Length: 86
Image (cartoon, rainbow, N blue to C red; front, top):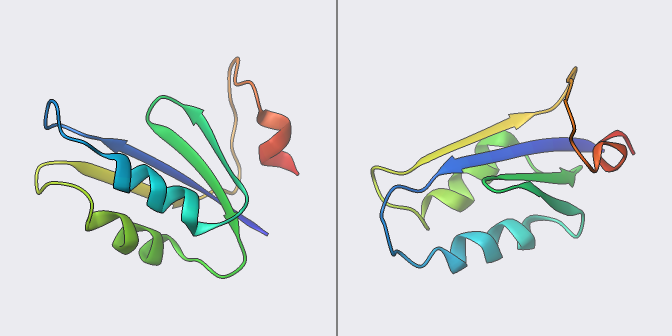
């Protein structure tokens, strides 16, 4: 199963990003909101491009989304690292 990292900068103060978060949760039954602006999603069917495309409709033109397939990684004080390694 592939683990994807999703991170974002949401730059419009006061905007309701509820639909963005619901979309992330709907991508897979296996997800973890690891840090404030970081999610991890596990899937065999998704690609980084398909995740980006699904999320981009819920943000403004000046917001930033970054999606990456995790391979080799390291962390410092990241709770939940066991989840990523499963």
